[in-house]
Length: 274
Image (cartoon, rainbow, N blue to C red; front, side, top):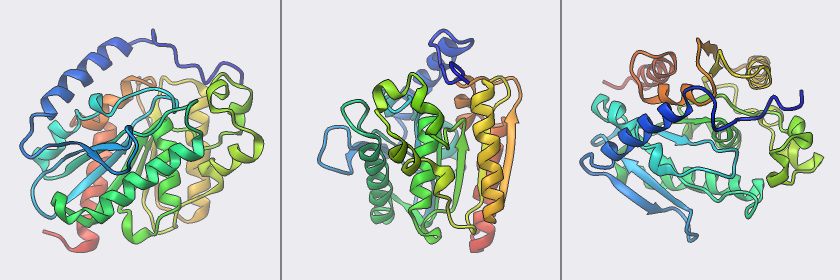
């Protein structure tokens, strides 16, 4: 399916979505108690932002996309403007980028960020039993791999947006120009070969206007998760492309936001939280 993993910067809605997210992210940085550029490791890009929502609250830990070579956490703070007033913290890390860093190195950063959140949950006002993982595109691959490597007692739910779950098709695609994957590494970094605990509830979604390659990746990963015993909610957000769907993580009334809300509520019910 050559070319179907292309993500041109001039795709419809790209500029508008980016402007909206950047504007709202600047607003989020001014929220009370915002902890910005917190180190979770010694390297310059091993930093994260915590937008807290009080004491003992649930938290969303979100891994942004960018094909593992682009992007900054500073323009993915924006969902906090919706989640913090609803009593949920928002956490977004940076991680090292390809080609300077390998994909195993990048995944190591994602795992280190998650481990930091677990270790510092109380200090950040977070209930360590209510940490919900999510990510889009490359960030969905990272979130899925972290969930697979982590005990179910530490991950409350997993929400994956427009992700890449089988990296073998990328071996002959442009992204491998900076990923430098071989067959063994592609398999080792593919969530479809490393599934989370069957106890973990998962949402898998993508935009209805995305390329068939991205939609097929999501559909096939949802099938693999169901076969693994996971409770899976799969849907395609109508009319959204790969960029437009990102805004839904922080926009009440959209399908992705509603899915995140359901995970929060189901977790509270399991834990019998007020």
